[in-house]
Length: 458
Image (cartoon, rainbow, N blue to C red; front, side):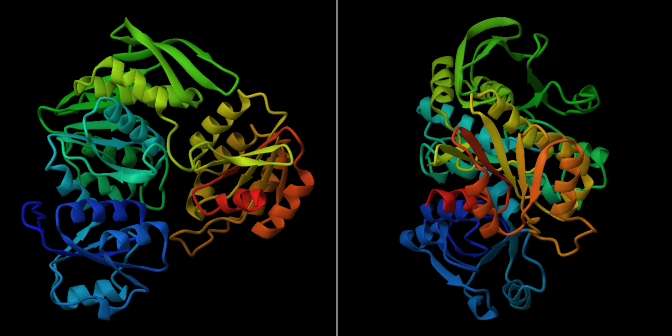
């Protein structure tokens, strides 16, 4: 495999340079004087930012973009061998790295590297860790899966030993990471277009955890089912976090304000440490914050910086993000696309004092919708009113006999007011008629459903 040497800059070409993670990796290399170019389908804020920094970006992918003077190609899981640039790179025998391989190689250059994994909560917890490290003046390098509100970017380039990044389990890409600290937030069924079942997923997470450096530490949710079956096989030390006193890091005396924001007493091995106040709502964010606390405390960040960072962390774009108000209706947007995420978001929403919780849900992939159908119905039924948009196909072409209308029908059968209105423009007209003063409207999903709320606010 080709190895990136940060001390010897070369010419790097990114196929899909406009992706959240890819654009951040490109920025990190450009800061080290690498010559960066790449391609994407259309211009975006990410590509324009890269162009402003000096990168060459081609719009549209063509074999002519791949020239012999390129030293290495970086590509994402969405790029296949029939891609013209991929095929030309093979033809010219240019070395190639996946996005995950490049990220893993960059991670090895930082002594205090932190990789955040889990079926859900990765971006939020990475944001929390980032804010703590910033509050502690550690000058971290950050590679987040979303736009961190405080820095208005998904990437921050620091010049210290601290590096924090998300670690995605899809296609086992996190096998490429060998961090000092591995964080596991949860392990649940997802990406069943790749994994066989939950046992297959657990096996992959165990592999990821055992990639942790020998002198490092695994930070793991102590509430994961059959935890000892995982921890007994770890090759390095570990600490647990959770909501019960037997965890290494736990929360007691949890109180929520009218916006669902928690204040709690932090305990370490049962001993009170101090008070924590969060700027992000919901019980799930108490757990996320405990994970962030555990890894940062273990890495030597003082409690004062931990408490300050969490009090300032409003998260990242598309995570319970307030977009605005229209006609007395408050509009939030949330990236939740797995039943557990949806339930956590709606439980946080129900802790507020809005008159109704209205959800516009855009299912993400036919595989996920079909395999977790009953769980989606149960989670979405927490809302008072649900509008279901057409399924966002993403990488898939086969519908598997699944549709958004089937999901809406199942919600009605469960007793939840629900409507299938697949088209975005029709959904906007429908909501203008149905939403009332005092409602909380949440656009929800991993696709482009955010556009509905933004258009209503216009």
